Image (cartoon, rainbow, N blue to C red; front, side, top):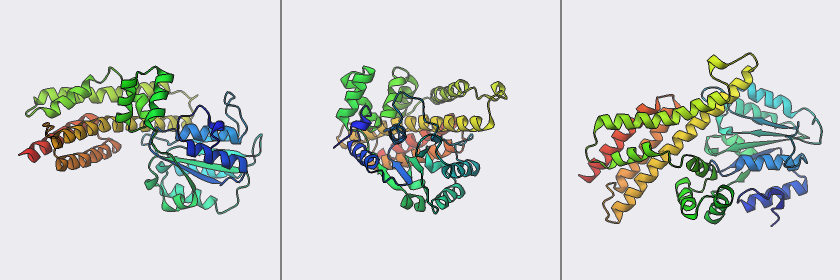
Amino acid sequence: MNTLPFDGLVGHDRVKAYLGRLLQSGALPNLLLFTGPEGVGKSLFAERFARLLLQESKNSALSPDLFQFFPEGKIGLYSIETIRELISQIFERPNSGKKRLFILHSAERMLPDGANALLKSFEEPLLSSVVILLSSKKEELLPTIRSRAQEVRFGSLKEDEFTAFLKARYGVDEERAKDHYSRSFGSMGRALELEKRQGKEEELKHFLHLLKEPDPFYPELLKTVEALAKRVEEERERLLKEASLEPKEATPLLTAKKLRLSEGMVHLSYLNSVKELLLQIFISCRDRMVATLEGEGGGITPLAFEKTAFQMTQALKLVESSTPLAHVLESLFIKIHSLTKVELL
């Protein structure tokens, strides 16, 4: 299995071999769809594939024939104008080589009109363009898009390659690397977020501690959820500042397009941070359920856990609709706590 062209990227040997065969054959589909969990390397593989296809070295600047598109605006969606821009460019000639390659990140964020317009463009022959859609939620893509594209599936990383990479690249010890693997479900992106927050999770630990209390002190709960929400939201503000996107700091040098693009990516980063937070709450509840089944007094029955998982899904939907995170966490706490108490009565 020849994986050498993708040397340095972690895992996914079958994907490496398949993409290598595509490059060797020269028979490239016009539309590829990279699917799989968040943080497992889809965008890294797409960029490496682009460099190989466009015959650029790993250390060179990105080719003028490589175009990357990201969700836009405060809610992180693709506007129909952006999709039309993409469509107009895929019919143009390459700038310097034989191919033009387009990467659409978080493709599930396309609106139906945009997705249909993109799909219709493939009814005409594309002699020199290849489009790669990246998605961690392929079920949210139009069925017609999924059936038209050549899918390349990425799974979670294997534990041995995952821990070896963390130890070699970041100096993480064996025990912590294995803990990151368990908590991230094999997602390197999530693991690196966990590593970045190492030693900064006191608010989450206290939140989980209060969940186990039979009668938690309500003012203490409010203080905890506000601190937890503040930590996540401060990270969003930091990203906005780094991108020079705060309205009071924006200048005419920042084009409207750049503003929308960066806002969209910051919003998706914020949602990913919230998902990570909810995932850690989910894992804690799961561990308590396992302890209950093993007779160790975890306090959460399987039925309560099933209902808890549903409440977390609802919580994420509230955040996506711009409900303040502190309000969402407070409501989630009350619902989970009441469920565990009821199920144990």
